[in-house]
Length: 591
Image (tube, rainbow, N blue to C red; front, top):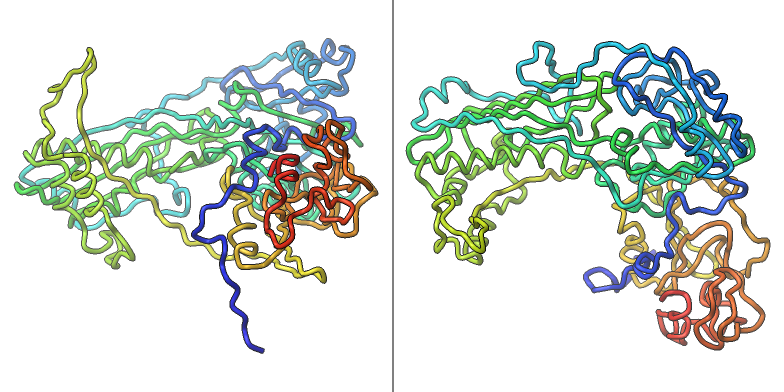
């Protein structure tokens, strides 16, 4: 059997984003916005002390409010099957680990009632001395076993002290970075529904498989009993790459109101203590160089914080392992376990704060050596990886610095600090380099099926960066010359309909279940409440579309028409021989 080469039509060509128009028009469905039957609403209760235990809870006033269904506390919370993850093991005792920790919630018929009733709950605490101060001189700092992403905690080559002692020029400086919080446009949100088959979560997450595994372990379920639905994520900055306690709280609450979905969306204020943050850091960098600027020693020692209930160690100093050549090198990481929320990954974890400190030190060393900062970096460009001795597959830092200097007009700058002032503002020039690792991961899988109608279906369990999750449907199967394709990307894929979601019994035979077409005439998932239905005749101008409820913008055009290609919808179907819908169809359903 000979192989047939398929022409590529999408790769390397400018294309409209499949979901672009939906997003800019506000038509995209995010986690909290899914329509479910008879939803209940959850508002969290949070600890108001930094450390201690709850000694009494008065829920009488909250429970008496009309519309309140249940007040959830550690007294009536379901017992978790696995409490090994301290961040997720909420409501299992009266202990409080940090201020803002989730210690309960109010479940009510409306979000307003839940929030009001939460303010009526009264708690008494027994406080204990808390420790929330990060200092480099603490006597309880410890070395974590591994850093985030599996990097080694410490590395050493040569003799750093001997190298510094022999250097003609040395620098010993400490740089600090603050706590930084992930606060994406879409807050963390969950809809939790329990059925006889298990748990369904409509959730905003970038880590569908890790979240499913964590939820399954916490509630003692088989992973196949947990279904996650997350077609869109409105930003994450790393906070939605890891699982957090709000999802567990929503699932707990749903167990207390059988048969009803529970909706939870964190407020902006709650996100500061619930979804992680970049740890503050204290970084001491020592550099030693010869008179000509060649480095002979690099030492990068980091102190940062973690939570007492769960460890997270950011890989802050790893940039100093690869950026510049030197025979004597050392990097270390030490943690202070404090009474604080759990840190997490945030936009270039490690590299962002680490490169700030390293590049600041390189600039200061250039001044001490009397060298241009670009020239100093070029003189210390390594020929091979300084840590492993292996050759680089690619490394273009020198060329980048030289081209940037050319475009900037670097040679004409005045390097004197505070030399230029414009309209009362000091202006200066500077340069910095950066690195980011290329992670190599294996084990990804996809299922591609071809149907009798010639359509291809691609099924993956993936959650790409928030704005690009539909890209593969254009650049893989559809971009390979296949005339029609559809991609099913329900994360944590388990066949069947999400619990609690509605689906009409009417569906044209040519339509894929619960799919709508993209702007190129291909099918894509939307939701399970209004699958495509083709009316027997085109919808008159100004009337409502069957599935979308929107007015048709022009006569003979229906929003449902191009969804299935039924002959009954010929007014809006694609023109013969065209891969895109007609203008009428596109103007009607967002193409």
